[in-house]
Structure formats: C-alpha cells, structure tokens
Length: 421
Image (cartoon, rainbow, N blue to C red; front, side, top):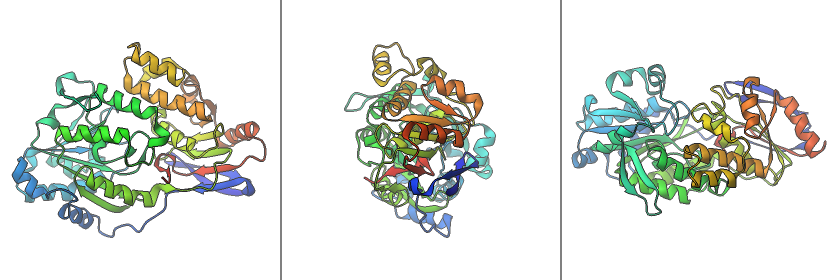
C-alpha cells in the first residue's frame, strides 16, 4: 500500500492506496528560496522590468498612492512585501499619510481589522490607512468606458483618483486568468460586479484551455482594464508551497508579470504520462469555502480521464457559497441553462453564474465526489455533487464506479497546479 497524508485545510487526513494502482502523485516542486526576503524585494524594486523605478514614477505621477493588496484567501506574504515597499516610497518622498492600502477583494467578504493586522503587519496598518473594496458600493465605483471587446470597466473610485497606483500579489496557476498576479489585482480585485461577471463568464466557458496559459482572452481583457485604470507598477511574488519566496518581480503590469510566470512554471506546472480513472485532489490552499474549491476541481478535470471520477477533499471552513447564496437556488442546472438565464436577465449575480457554470462544466467532464464537513452536505448536493464524509468512503465510491483495479492520480495542492503547457 501507498500511505500518505493529504492536506485538509490546516490539518491532514490519512490516505492508503494500492501501490500498483497509483498512476502518479503530483506536487509543486520546491525551488531554493531566497535567503533574505527584504533584500529580494529591494532588488526587485531596484531592477524593475519594463518600467521606471518608483522614485521616477513618484516624480512623474505624484505622491498620493494606493497600493492594492490581496486578501485572506491568498498566499502572498503581504507584510514581507509591504515593509520594504513602504520604505522605498518613503525614500522617494511619499509620506505614510499619503498611502492607502486597498484590499483587492473582488467579490469576497470584507477583511476585519484583526485579519488586516495579521496579514499586512500590525506595524504597517498602524502607519497607513487600510480600506476594503466593496464591489456593490455604487457610490464608490466609477465607469471608465469599455474594453475593445465591450466589457464595461467599472472600478473603485479611490484607486482611480490616486496619483500613483501600485498592485501587489502572488503568481500561481489560475483557472480564470491562466495565472494569478499582475492585472488580476485590478480585475477582479477592485472591479464592480458587471466587469467581473463578464470576464468570469468568458473564462467559465474556457477554463481548461485558460489554466496555465499566460496568453489568453481573459488575461488580455484584464490587462486592458488595468492599463485604462492607470496601474503604474506591480510587485509580485513566486512562492514554494511552504510560503518561502523563490523570486520577486516588479515593474510593468505585463512585462514583469510574464517573467514571474516563467518562474512560477518551474514550481507549479506538471507533465503526466497518462490521465487516470480517478484523481484524488486536495483543495489546498483554496479550502475556505466551496466557491474556492472551484479551482482544484477544475484543475483535476485537466488531469483525470474524460468521464472519470474526481475525489475533492476540502473542509469548506466558511461554508458552501457564503457570499453568493443565490447560486444554491440554481441547483444542478447545466452550463447552457445558467448561461441562458444570465443572458435573459433572470439571473442578476453574474459572478455567481460564472462560478456555477464552471462547476457545472466540471460535472459534465467528470463525476465529482466531495469530501467535506457533514454540515455542508446539503448545499454541496444541491449543486449536483456527490458527497462523502471521509476520504476512505469517497474512494470506495470511486472504485465502485470505475472498477476495483482503477488507476489513481493524486494532486496534493489542487488549487496551485496546472498541466504543463
């Protein structure tokens, strides 16, 4: 037998599989981390890619600065990036009182004061103001126009009114953007619902082609929006799965991001020799709710045989879809049905519709069994997924469906993996 521990949120679960049936185990590679994190951030700031340095941008743009920071669902070592970034801005003549951290929440819930202090550093939040983006607050959203393809550009007013606009983030594979980081801090990070809905719908219809592709239709839309919003500079990390920093890139929203993607591929892109009957996938690090579990389930569909079985392991610590509960009312509708309801205006929450479509597409490609807490079983089943209270029971169900000699692949970090493109 092959015995190993599979991540389940902040804990692990024991898994035993017949050794001869294990097709592969895919985990992100570990690269040598930098020894001095602050020195690495300072190096990236001093050697911007495709952009003037911050001191030059301050002279050109002005001192009123907004820095986009991602939220509790992301792995970015925000405090480690912000401290040297603030020091660089101070050295360029930008005072702390001229700096605002704007949480690029997308459509996620607001960060609490305690969460902000923990994530961005208690010392940092004492120095500069922190403001949560609210995608539903129409008074603080501004429409700039449309992208070339017709997507409305609706963005946070505070960001648009800043003189110097900076975005931080982390670069990992992403089902809706190819790779996270870069312009993603603007769209969906600080966008209104209409903008995010339209990009997510485009992505929902093409997730398996977009995942792991640096150049794709959604990324182009995001970068068009970021350019029109005036994003001046990005600071993005590439991490090992333990959170240690492999590389920091800074500079232009496209040029710096693409260099970061090349580094991230070395960690997260995997090539396998076959697509097995069953894929067992840990949702980590996207285990907070079933909405986040969309990522690892979609990733697993790229690795399992067509029509195979996926066993998705996630505790959903904050619920099923706590910020978009309307999604539960659509039940197990298919992609085309939900898309038509959205087009006809009968569905108002376009972002939720896009995520529902993504999950529905996964159900159409594979049979999905979700291992989670019993309290979430009704909601998960309502969305059309099978449920098991343990990995052991889920695997019994999977082998019953695929046969006792079925092959099994294991994704240990499902949300942070991609097939090699």
